[in-house]
Image 1 (cartoon, rainbow, N blue to C red):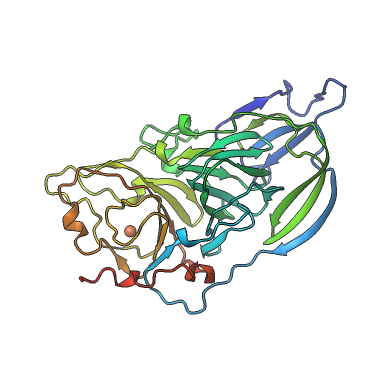
Image 2: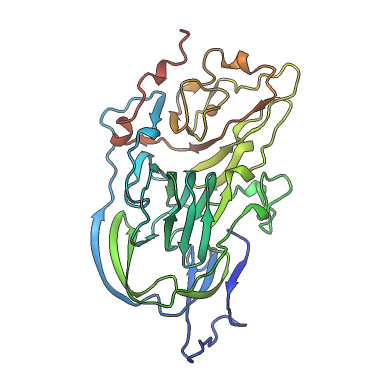
Length: 385
Ligand SMILES: [Fe+2]
C-alpha cells in the first residue's frame, strides 16, 4: 500500500540507537520490496528476527492439472469442498497459471504455526467467517466480505473466530495494488475511485509478545514449504512505520459506479496485478435509460479468461449458479446472459448481486481437484429448454 502508517514506539531518526528499558538495543528490521526501490516498512523487534534454531523441509507444493482439458464453459461448486483444518496448508487449488493460483479453503482450526509466503502476494476474500489476523505489524480484525491483502514476506496467522469459514484465495508472484487510474501521481486515491483511504484497514492493535521459547513458522518459497523454528515469539515488534503492511478492504465498502446504460467490467475493478485484475460486483442501482438492458451483452473476452466467484445467489445474468459457484468463461468463446436473462433484466431497478471476478490475461489451467466438484451440465445452460 502506498500510504504511510505508523504504530507503537519509534525512534526520532531511523537507523539510530533505540533501546528498551533494560538498555538493550531493539532490532531494527527493514522489510521492503523490489530491492530497495519498492514499498518498505521499518520494524523494531525486541529480539532479532534472525534467531533461527533450525529449519527443515516439509514438502514441495505442486498442483495436479486435469488430464483432458478442452476449451469450454466451466462451473465448479466450491461449496462441495470439504472443511479441512488449516487455512494455509489445506487450500484446494481450482485454477492456475504462472501469474495466479485461485484456491478455496474451509478451515476449521487456527494454525498452530505462523505462515510466511515468501514467493507470493496473497488476497484472501472472506466469503464466510470472522476473526483476527495476527501479524508482526499487529492484529487486524477481519469479517465476511473483506479482502485481506497480505504482501509477500509478512508473517501471519489467522485466528479463526466462531462460525464457518470459507475463504477464496488468490496467490500471485506479482505485486497486488490499486489500478493506477484510481491514483494521483502522488499515490492518493482520486475522487472517482470506488473506495478511498478511509476504507483501508491496516492493523489496529500492535501487540509485542516478549516470549522466549520455540515458535514454528512455515515458509513458502520456491514452491517448497520449510519449517523454521525461532527461539522467540515472532510477533515481538514494539513499533513500525512505512508503506508495507497487511491490510483489509471490505467488498461492502466498494461503492459501485452506475450509468444510464450498461457499464463495462472495468468500473468494478478493485485490484491490479501483473497479468490479471480483480473486480467486485456489489449491490447497486441498475441502468436508468428507459430502453436499457441491464444484463450484459454477449461478449468475447478475446484476451482474457473470466472467472467469477458468486458470493451470494443473486447474479443478474446467470442461471444455475449459486452461492459458492466458481465459473470459468475461457478466452476464445463468446459468453453472455443465459436465455431469458436479458429480457428479464429490462425495467429492473436494482440488483443485490455480490461477486468477485478475476480476469486473467493468460489462459488458466484447471486442477484435477476442481473436476471433483464440477457441474458438467453448465456448458449447455445457454441452450433454450
Ligand atoms: Fe464477461
